[in-house]
Image (cartoon, rainbow, N blue to C red; front, side):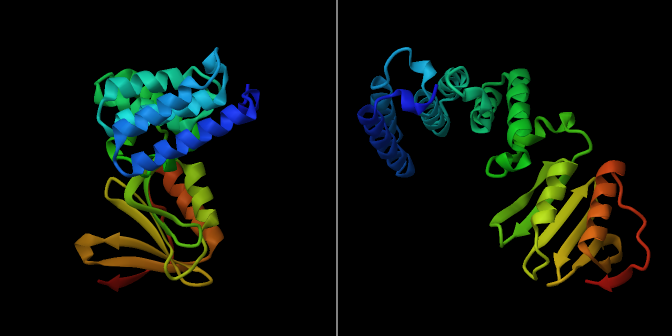
Length: 248
């Protein structure tokens, strides 16, 4: 059942209270925000858990408790959200629930929830959180590599390497334009394959720290995608002909 099951006046009041709560969270006034969210929840007719508004308000409550580092209360709120209208389709709910369970050392259940967040939303949902959470599920990710990315056109940036699987990585690279400021890197076990934009093509770069330089080659997008796919499938960098060496 959707938000349209609430009458318009009530829903408008809920929206206002929720936005006020969000502003208070941004100001770090967590207890005041909880009052606003709970005031909004009290406006929802019973049974409350059939309404989408109840689900996202519980998520807001859980998020505040997470920010307050009250992880048991956070987990409780997110469990309730998960079991409310549409909750089991929301990657953010699984993410925050998994994080909360991790912090209270319910590690097996945490792994289950974090993995569901990954399945629903992919690696990027973990980009803004501590890497310990995605590392907790990394052993369950088949043939992953660690990605770094600068995509100024699509405003996607991964500064701290993030475990990712082939399909999502190829989608990110496919959206990446070969501009000077754009950059794509994959790494694992000290093996690194990276690409820098050259306006109409890509500079493939394989760093070699022991030689204090990099092996490079200009490639087109199709060639780059083949090299990326090979790295994922074989977990090793392919033999690439006609590389030249550049000293650092």
